[in-house]
Image 1: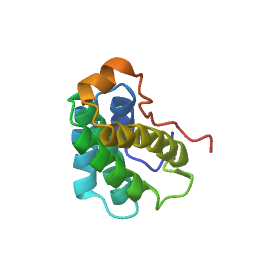
Image 2: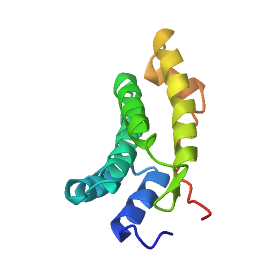
Image 3: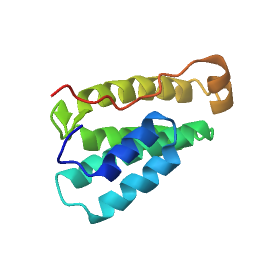
Image 4: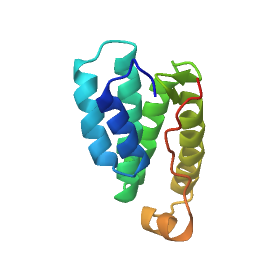
Length: 130
């Protein structure tokens, strides 16, 4: 765990990894509002991916696709590891899910149908080994 990241950040990471996406959003949004760069964009990118996963669980494929893309675009600004997390791994996992969701959209499959027929690769935040 990085000494430089606030405890609330790690709480948000735990919430994200345990599937509490709405709570993660709330936790990281509180940090994001008060933060300055470069952490501000990191918090925003992660919370957007959390909201994307929240949308996915609520059968909102369009919202999930949009926010996965936006969150990933923000995180691409960071090195492979930053703030004690493996940013590259989170981006890879998010890209894999985004690809599936985009293909689903193109093929006009509903979110319900997708969730019933396929195990989706839900991203988790991996701690860096630095």
